[in-house]
Image (cartoon, rainbow, N blue to C red; front, side, top):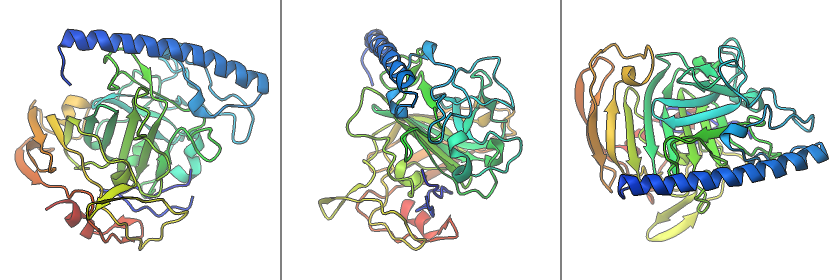
Length: 390
């Protein structure tokens, strides 16, 4: 996948390349997880056998495994870009600064991983190392590298009925990426369908059809990282249409692929409405579909502004409640419920890094607005901020 610019609230990137009773819900979720696990086991055996017989890998999205049956490597084949550089069987013996774990976990606002460079110093760029990226996690329990406390300076976790999404701000040198790397997209496809990273698997206990205990595989997912901003989305395997994890808009970056507030120094976990399918928008009562060109010049103007979905039942945290040795200096423990209406207007009490409370209000424009967005040198113009917030 070609690299893209992902910065601040988004980039038009420069790149070449619910509520039933708890008992009923738990029962239904348990049955879904068991059925998915059984199907995954059967599928995994078939795909592994087929790949082994041919000596070449299958498309990454055809490899499905129950969490307990993850192989040492999904792609051990010296074919095209292979074999994969790391491994998928990650545990207490593989964790640490030299880990090459290529199984990513994303459960909730305090427990998730991002892809980063398998290097010892922050000299990597996504465009150069995407095939060999490894997992960096907020907790040291996944057999991967650990994101140091203070590196993540803002997070918004969103759980919808079709996917979970984690967006935020990060000192990306903690992922061994250069400070000025405008980044790109990691996904389970790539031009050769072998994925970036090669053989990368993604699991979660927090998918919408799950039970918050059992790991389920997210076959479709995408992760942008660059310009100090990240976004990660895992689509529920029981929801196949529409596809909210399309990997065909890598030039657009985070704010179009995963519309969110992207507020730094804020840590919130919410339930949310579904976003619009990327590339589909309404103007003057008519629905249009936009297709990404092979390249997108720096002065490109897109015909719509991404709609930030409504959210509810939000809880705001301090980073010290979520991450070890986090950047906040306050020791106070405060959580506050907030909600966002259908028009995107938010009124909330948030916690700053000093521990003080402040009232914030923002409103997001709906789709259909024509936005002049000029990217200069990979940095989004301030005019875009005005288009998003009034």
